[in-house]
Length: 90
Image (cartoon, rainbow, N blue to C red; front, side, top):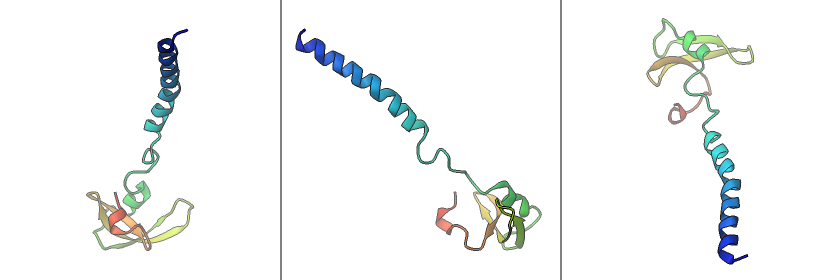
């Protein structure tokens, strides 16, 4: 066999191995599973309220959370004490 044939075969095999890996990486990047915006419970807790109002709502574990209504991405949502810093909200 000549070297040109072996080189082309090796490149084809490498492409066939790497193609599925890169496709999976692109679809499962770090932000794929990240929730966008506040949870629905936090939004509904502030319905009919104004920014700065205190509210309580049930957290994911069923616990009662004390929170303050704040505007996040153009919508009012309850932000529990100790919630994410201002710069980390999406």
